[in-house]
Image 1 (cartoon, rainbow, N blue to C red):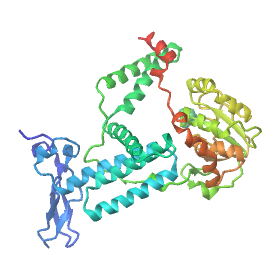
Image 2 (cartoon, rainbow, N blue to C red):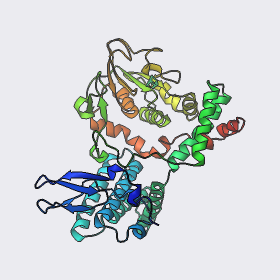
Image 3 (cartoon, helix red, strand yellow):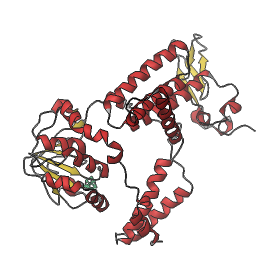
Image 4 (spheres, helix red, strand yellow):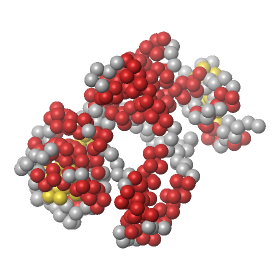
Length: 414
Ligand code: SF4
């Protein structure tokens, strides 16, 4: 019996389509798994622009199913893996743009050598990425790491990253935490309890059989926009008063700031830890700073961890958790003020009357609060180096199922 994923009787009409020969303009018919076809008009052999191997792209039995795998397909599998490893590497390095830039240059060099030597591109690039990470990891643990220590650190990290690529673990981890949080909300009297209960049941049903949504293989897109985050070397801000007017920080550096708002549903606990770390006990900052964590749980944890003390020293006005200034109906900034805000929109008058609002990150808002202006790229990097050094602790999410007081309360809710 043939695998349904590769059996034509299970294909839909989009699996057979026509393309135009780039040489003579004739129509050439393709099946989705044809790697190339010869034009009957001019004899030009053209590559299938919509090549799609369906389930074989990720199935471990693809070779047994299809026989010898076409070269183009093997290349496609390699690309998939190397791109996913690159994303994981950037996630590991967080905002350490200097190292991201370095590692990407190493990868470009490795790619060139692999192509020249005819080596397996996917394997070479993954090895280059992961060895570099091993060096970084080993340098963090040993003053002058030996080759063995680098390889050891690299292997551990590689195993963790490659293991994660095949898994739904981050989503499962988040949802398990979320179930405990929702049960605590019911216990605390949040409304509507029935809605929360229905949501818990849906999440638990998904956790019992976790399957992720995927785009249809034949989905059509109005546009595909690829952004290599390694090309972004400085913060981006949205300028007054249009969320679409995005500019690099260096284009607006030096703009005087009157007030800053760190809050809204776009922030999480890590952003507040980062902002407090940047403030670092500074007193009498030249900007009026507003701080409003999105939830009571975030605020309570931030207090326990001592970050409210840093906000207090800076003279920040800490608001009740929630939408706060983002909504603009609880408090507002001064009329005509120029503001850096972490909220979601900067439409005219939303944060206050006749205001000019830049949208940016919590880290940038904290740096700007200290300086009284939007910093230069160099000032920003110098001020946030302290975050990079402690990124693991700063950007750690609250896993409610692993916090005893929340886990215990959750047990009391059915
Ligand atoms: S008002 Fe702002 S913080 Fe509140 S939900 Fe809307 S976007 Fe999020």
